[in-house]
Length: 501
Length: 75
Image (cartoon, rainbow over all chains, first blue to last red):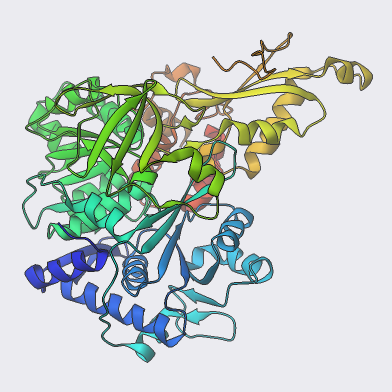
């Protein structure tokens, strides 16, 4: 078991040096590859860049689609004892800059598709000293070119790392609406990724389709994949998952339930044909395993996929636990369960809520002592999930304690955040946001006196317009897809809060 | 283009072809998930041999908007 992220890379390089570590597309159908040795060397050169800029040890934000440059920046950062802050590339610029500032970031490594962020970051993030572009060919006064820095600082970097030092801050939605920076150490991430032997042979081909700023993708696709000597193929766009399956011919893919549902529809669409033909058409010749995480998966899909010779392994976790808590194994499945606790995790149930403890539990939330104290108690992490654990360590979930909405693609949405935004409008007296049938919906009790005074005749239309305006600015997974208008007030709890259920 | 799109839509959601009109919204009216929508765009890329920009595609809400976008990029 590795205790630092650097150990993972060093150990695998020693075993698999010249073999392919990363495969990705350039252009439409050409595949380029990087070996374990190249990945290690380029990461060390990135560490040298940070040292050369005198930023080693500081907080380095990385944002972009999954790419070789992203991975090199990530490993180069954490392996130099600096702290990586992966940011969602699809965040609105203002939100992204707020996180850059709040995480005390001094260097931003950015994909040029987000040039809009650069303009705002220069004004709004006073602590930010350097912006490094992943694509720019030549540095100028404002933006450094990653490829030029590589030439300038190319070198070896070795230094001892404390396994319990901070490696990564990952942002996740909080119940108060403000996203929280989860602080994960080297040990948190490295042990979570390597403590369980899933009997995956070396050279297994993995297609990485989930967003790289998610703990599940970073830990299980990348860290676990590299620790096992896998070949990690990068999916260039969510549009092209089906096409890239045919191109890369993976053995394994990590998915969120939303994707599994879409694939299930494709299977149904060609249901009349022999199963071997369908499997080849939809999943290629080599796929045998799909790991599902991030949100709840209906167990019916496990049977459906199984009939096509594909094993779905359902897991459970949260960013605060680096992230895996439990997982199913192909030889050890209880269908209604989200899997067995992994070896570095123990669990107990307190008032129906699952608490976990072990080497992957986070240090806390960055600069949020109150939220940290609410979530951690004597080393136990309160998951906010209701459920139970059987004698063999299998975890069964029954619901969420918090109001947090978990969408089918695993994004966490705080309903309060959306409610507060909608509530800013004078016409909205009370509002409740929740998830129903897989989409986010809002129920609004409008201010009827105000409506009368303003002589508004089309109440539904006026409120829908409000929602449309909100949706235009919102990131995709926070958009509201349904509106219900109430004629009476919401039922309240004794403390005058709207009853959610 | 509209007819081809209607045919593809039928692979993702159970809506009768006659019910699909240009104003139909993919997610709200037809019941697409975001990933259904992405996957369909991927199929369209193959079908019409075009390259779809994921960011621009995110602004497409109705069938009509999709038809217009496809006509624009396929020249």
